[in-house]
Image (cartoon, rainbow, N blue to C red; front, side, top):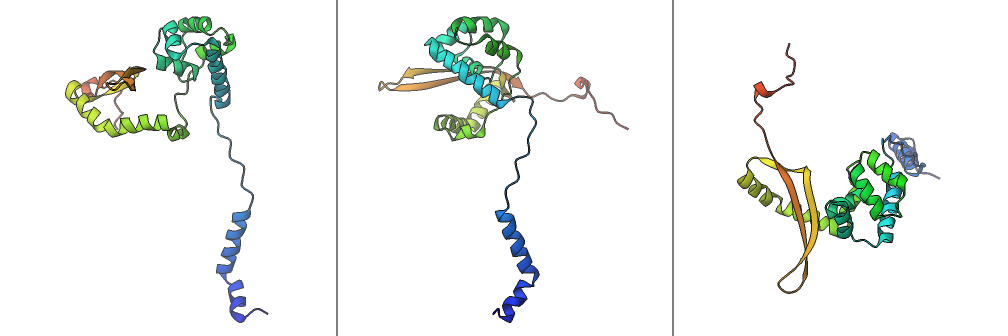
Length: 202
């Protein structure tokens, strides 16, 4: 038999709230809402795998493939991974260098506009995270030197070249060399006379 205190709790608003919370906790999860996107991540991932398989079948390293294409080794990797747009001129060279790559895949790489983004999960990969950490750790010092040598502005990541290589240290160890070569973009003084799209004013 329930005590009077228990009966009072069961009939109280607090008990009703507990019951609702328990029901919510065990209720089946609603299916995720579909998000519209102009690209298919699945199609890009599948094409990337086919292109990387074709590269492996060719036996070419990224350095060797980049020499045949006439672009940097990093840009070569970006092309295969769908992170850069393939030009018609380079497409011909790519088809010759990777004969196992399908003509359709290469044609799609020339017509599609890349979604230049990344999955945040990639930052959990140690090689990627260490590079990210190095940039952020030295970021303020890099900015200070850029300002001293170039003025008030930034390094472009569009008019930009990235190359990855190796060198040998004084103790015979292999060392990684990553070169960023970006155009300097100065911040402008926003002069009224130069503003060709002035806001309307009542």
